[in-house]
Length: 337
View: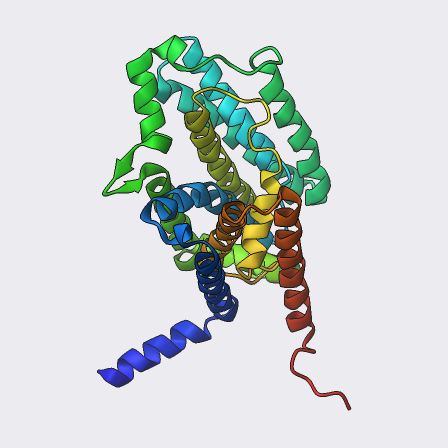
């Protein structure tokens, strides 16, 4: 029995990309303890709960971006879709539309954008940077236009205080089992997408496209359909984050989700998702999002300036990508002749 357990652990640790995941989690522990030694408030229960809630947005954006990075693509429109989701849902609620209908409308719009991105990249072979750059401007423009180029009023003015409080508590302020609902929402979606990527044929096809798209075609993989599915995952994650930001502010902000596309890339690559495609595990994205938020939280608590925060995180992202390139080149650990 012990041998079976040992072999299971060995198989788990030997999975491709698991080394980066273990490294990211180890780095998370070191960073958290280091900040805790500087400021004991980092270890407080309230700070941990707030950290988990704030990390959830980065986790969801990271999951959506990681799906695409594994295929060798990227989604620059994901942050603008966050803003569009927040503005559409908030605008409809200020008009008296029920939160459920407003959320479905926001989801439908985001899914349409996901399909467009997938078709442009998968079928028409547009470079993902260019295709999603275009939809980034389109979706941000939609976020501005939906309420005549201004932020919305408080959602409670349209649906009433009770319904407004229920919406905000469900997505942001409420707790279940002592933990903010925001984290539970992110965790459930993470587990669903983790299962889809690691245990289904679609997940295998996503890795196949990122490894070698020509070989994937010869193996019978429907590249267009798989690419669209990956962009749909990104759209779902963007929509939910938009709803979270709407609930947090209690209104719609036209600039919601600004720069989130880069946050998603950072969460993925810190956790070992290769920007070159084909490798990486969503467990790493979880660790990457936690590292990002722990750094941001810790630097805030010790009074570091915003510029310092961005500098530190930027260096970590560049180092993570550089390490991936070195490992892929096969030069890692080689002795010079």
